[in-house]
Image (cartoon, rainbow, N blue to C red; front, side, top):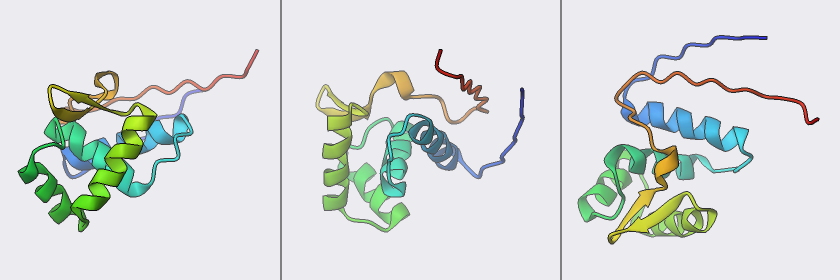
Length: 112
């Protein structure tokens, strides 16, 4: 059975948030909205290590730097964030180009 849905989103950040929310739901990750926002923002920006990028996140989502640090710690333990060359980034296998249209195909099957 096939179903098609189309959602129009404002910008790269909103598209990334929707993608990571779906990824979280499908894989039972139980990420909070703020965690999804940080993952999405980091994916779009490339990393969350630079002070100006952190400040931008805090302004955009009305949060604080200590909150970011707590989330980063949790997401590193989960394997979603990695530290590469001194920068905190998303594990490359789940990073997409959110400036382009995104088509997802999700296949749910019964256990055999």
